Length: 271
Image 1 (spheres, rainbow, N blue to C red):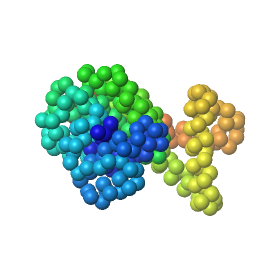
Image 2 (cartoon, rainbow, N blue to C red):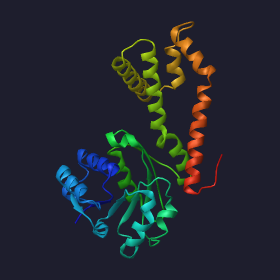
Image 3 (cartoon, one colour):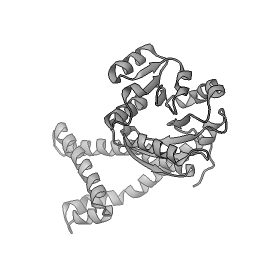
Image 4 (cartoon, helix red, strand yellow):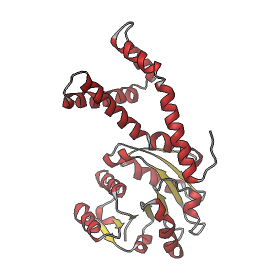
């Protein structure tokens, strides 16, 4: 019998399996993945050595099921399984915009449910995920879900009321960073650097700056001051960014993404 099962064998499910196997949380033989496509099942079985099935009901024999289908397929999938789902199987959902109440609606009220909001860097083991659980989920079950997503990044446990803000910040956040990277590369090219060199300079600068904030524990403003000499080059560049209200632009971007998440999930706006 599988110890963990996935309903949906797409990119995020694959990323989680890679992390699980790399961290040796489960053996490949203890993982079951359900997917409707024959070619996808064949790939997952050959690439990872996991069990595969085309029948979602087979997943209910495991103590934990990861729901990784498209959000608009959630209701059909859960309704088709509701009669066989018991409190012995915990549901862990990574579906964007689907609340604990949405997930619980088709299922018996005794089913433990954990909602997770991961982001795309989970695909390379550098993700950020928030989790929230319903009232029947035990501390041990929540801890198991945390361990699972720590295999592909970092995890924070939060009240579900924060999830739209999490979506606006870390869920959508990679796109903001990608845009910054793209813009800085173009800026380097505009100043005469070969594109390949500009890309290398920008990527390592991003990585290094992020690690300095994380590993030193210093406030970003302190680190910014350290590299900003009076009347120097950095001061000149920062003056342009501040004149363009760069802080306000990021605040407005996160606010807009948060409000869109609220609209999609049917939540009352908080801002």
